Amino acid sequence: MLADLSGKPANQFTGDGVLFLYYGVYDPGSRLSIPLKEQPLAFYKYPFVAGDQPLYQLSLNPKAGEINTLFVTGTQNHPEHLLVNEQPPYYTVKDSLVGLRLINLSAGSNPVQVKVSGPGLSKPIISNNLAYKSFTTYLPVAAGSNVGDLLVEFFDQASGNLISSFPLPGVGATLTDNPWRYRNYTLALKGLPNALDPADAQGIFKIYDF
Image 1 (cartoon, rainbow, N blue to C red):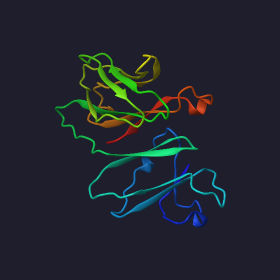
Image 2 (cartoon, rainbow, N blue to C red):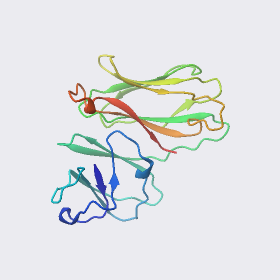
Image 3 (cartoon, rainbow, N blue to C red):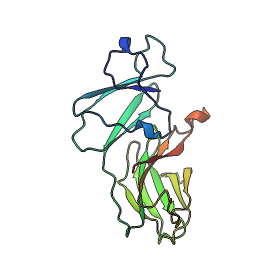
Image 4 (cartoon, rainbow, N blue to C red):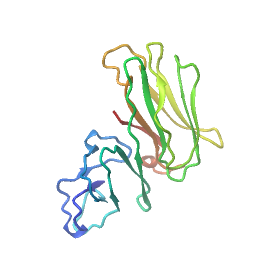
């Protein structure tokens, strides 16, 4: 998919100087600083053919100092978006934490329960009733040297069936390049329930939020 911030009409869109976005894949290049004014945003299918109309359009109105995350979800026939304004927390050296924000972006899904568990945690961290387009704040998860490999699991709240899981290896590793400690991530459930096409299957992807 192509994301265009030029504000030009569809018949003037050339496909040059736009963002390439892949479904369910985080790309650091998609972090943008935009001016303090109304910012139109249009999404086009890729490859683009002259005359194509946008798949979806919206307008952003950022305020000074805001940190926003824009999630584009739904389906190609019925796209939707969710704009979350939340500043990732800062952790001091004494904190030994990793922040995890959990979000349900699986269109048509039932509410989900999410469990974070593993060695070194005093008890599992559980978030209940995350309906579609619902999310938590950044949950502080221990990342001290006594913490081992953690596991994040998304369950169907009603049936208890496991939907998907995502491993967090080496959360408490003492290496100086520990990718988890003092950082924040979003783990998002994507895809469609009971999808026939494997490309549309439910799964979890990770977004680095500083």
